[in-house]
Image (tube, rainbow, N blue to C red; front, side):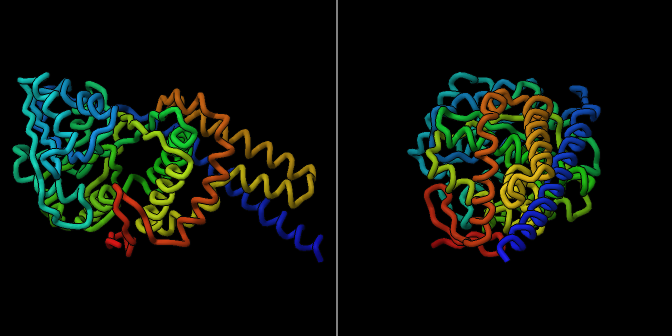
Length: 385
């Protein structure tokens, strides 16, 4: 009886390993398609004015450099509206320092004290919007660092009337802790490959990423404004989805930005991953379920154990490990140019096994902690606890 159960488990895990190997091959194909695309270009005379909306809360050591990267853009006409919820927020002092350093730029610090919904970030955006002077709006997370040609590259993606939103990939710059390095590894070798697979098989994206959301004010108003997504956790996903549902394309830009990751301890890393997993499950339940067949190394390890070291299981494990490494190296080097993740490749098997635990945790609860507040997720919406 026991041998029969082991044989069944070996077959099931072997089939799952083959599916995971197939997924690895698909991610490599998606990466090649992304890298080989012809980049869009735009002349200065074709570039529209852009209003950057930056909700801020608190100041970490990297905030100054992240915000400063938006101040020296090679772009003819743009403004930055910084929003804080309390007058004494430390982020306000960082903005004031930048305003003194760049006196000729169109910067404005706005105190947005109203709480219009459960998503504080979107609440701030809704209060910044009436002060923006341009038709093209750009929203990205406070810790995003960009290249000098960032706005020029993003704006070129909106030149086509059929494009309603431009978003982009990102890499994580980790702190020295293991938790932070595991987070960076997950972004580069799990999250970004998943985004490109969705981009490939769905013939374009139908959601946005918080690293960059560039869109027209008229399209935002047509979907109900920021007020329509005030209570959603995944506001970036919802914004992209609703613009896509209007028949407009979501453009995945060639530019890649960088986010600085906190110095997570292991508990903090797991908590953040769990929030992320439950957010994805609430937004794309089918895609989240499919993630079960992407864990190449854990499935191959299970097949090797249940098959009691059989030759076929050994070859399957070797193939899964090599392909998983190929995916990690390809995305870190060619897609994201992420040297930090390349130096942490030894953490890849650990990250994959932790990923299984996070995936299970994503199914069994609805509670999350976000910006120090506790919520329950109900159909993608936040309900305070």
